[in-house]
Image (tube, rainbow, N blue to C red; front, top):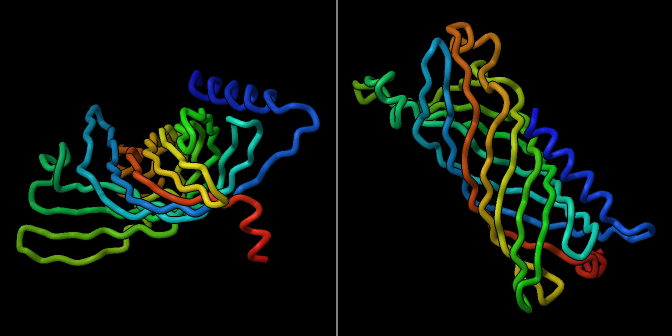
Length: 229
């Protein structure tokens, strides 16, 4: 509950920092990169962290500039999460096969972005906010001790949505109508990603997504969009 109260306070402070009558600047953008995720499992008095699943990140963003240094960011971003059951702490529990679950989510971030113009052409910033993910696909790449392998649909094992906290650091490089940026964001899941009818849940286990995304992208000032259309 303390984490939720802190997030609410941050968003209230950001909203109150907007001068009355100020015009909100909206800038669209694109983002892409790679995500490295694992599943933090617990249940029946046990806990384990899987090995990593590596997947792509791609999508579009919208930033609403509230002040010179504060903005709200949202968008639609496809992100692959999951975990590798054949490595990490989970290897001891599953010694005879390797299973990597790839969970494809359409995510909607609601992030507060606070930047500081450190030098001409360089603006470091921090990100913090909530992230809602809708599960689009769930596939397991399986290899057993007989060297047999294949891809299996495991959508029935997982809940239809994920929800958690975004925290990140980045830097953008203003100077023109197109603003490039790079960032590293961490994600901490709050909710159980196992479906209520899955064998995991029925056995008394739960799990959350945890990971890091390394991303780069471009933001476009309104002048660029107006020239296109």
